Image 1: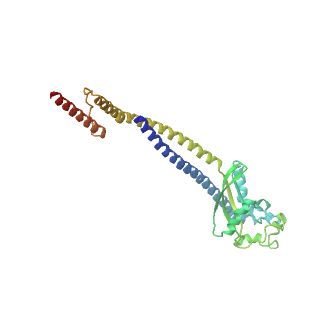
Image 2 (image 1 turned 120 degrees about the vertical axis):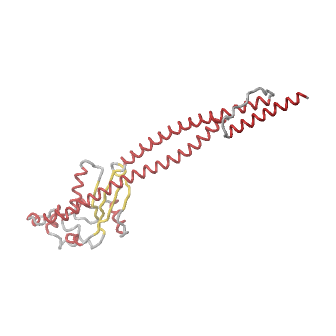
Image 3 (image 1 turned 180 degrees about the vertical axis):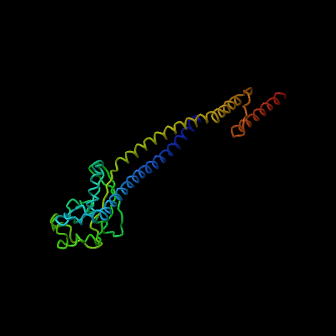
Length: 292
């Protein structure tokens, strides 16, 4: 195998190993970055829902409970959970893949009843009282999605409506019935606020970025390999080839070959200088022998 081919093979192996490592690290980084972006979106949407809850509690509810209509019928707009869910439903008109739900094991409003996987999330909070946030991934009808959940724990104001059916507002009982949404206990975890954000778009963007990165790195590697081969050809292979040719000619008795140029102090130049001295010594020795 030629010297240049050996060097090229070594470079290919080194670049290949480095490329595999770089691709693995890049893929993990891009996927982790995509997940962080989705999680950041979920946290922002969760804070938006909490803001809608707080706005309802502080500003809307005090106004509505003074209205005569509130005395005749139950106004769900006074419920923070209802306000957060309704405001999010307007967002879903433009972004249908996003979802927000205040899933509850024993809700007053049937639409808030937890599904099987949501019940698992709630029970996870019930089994781990110190847990303040839970992040997971699941497959939805529109593709993979990431969900962020926070527990809903009963506070004193909740018991005004959810202690017993007898103590609850009559208008609420008339609207939703006396079978569901009662028997809550103070500090009990009864549900979870769950935000679901589609995961497919960021993952696709990460995959495209990874593909573009690998294409760019491949082109850079090919160009670098070509430049390295060219430098090796000029700086090492050709000088070594000249040395080889000179040694071959000398071994055949041809001492008329010109000396090799010595233009530096690197190992090739030192080798060329040593070979020139050896050639001159050999020529001198042969002349001395011829004189005798």
